Amino acid sequence: MDLAIVNAFIIYNARRAAAGKSKVSHVSFMKQLHLELCQLQSSDWIQLLRHRGLDPTPTKPRRAGPAQVPMQTDEWRKGRGDETRKRRQRACKVCSVLKRADQARGGETTFYCSACKLKTSSKHALASRVFLCNKVKHQSNGVATSCFEIWHKHWKDGTMIPQARRKRKLRARKPARLPGGEENGEGDSSEQSSGDSASVSPPQRRQRTRAIDDSDKD
Image (tube, rainbow, N blue to C red; front, side, top):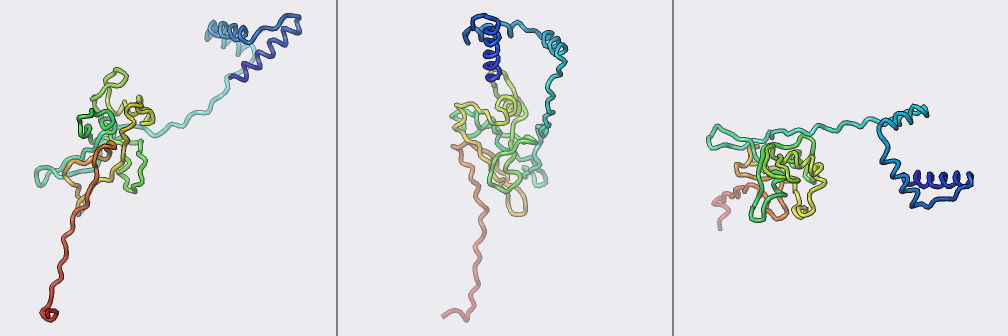
């Protein structure tokens, strides 16, 4: 665009010089250009295209990205009863960033985005999930909205987190599991702020003891 304006300025002065007129300064040219552009209407462009026999430059259709919809986790934990179970809750990424200083952890949810993924070195498929509350809990730009909307529309899929909140880094956590494939019933977050402790210690194994025969004794 800048190059086109410079070329137009050069050609405009060249035509004025050929017609025996004085050249105009670049400032005067830009002021006149801005004034004329502000006065253009949509009908002016249509007439211009018809007069020159030109068609608008075709644009390549953008590939539609994966749909970003809230999905409920398929992770389960034991309930209070022996035969009951509940969906496991994980830390909401938006709540973890927007939590107050006196809060140890943010809100938790069973919903995650079907398309967004966290960068993690873990090979566990569930560690990269971006969990987001699917209900209104915070305000963004003065509007009360859900964490799911804040993450995607206001924060552009987490790439435009407010500068004042970027000190709280988001971490992917490998889900804790107990022997037999059952998950630990305690609340564990898939993502914590940099100040939280989210380490999961592996289940302790019983130490094996070796029986001593009478022949081994002194």
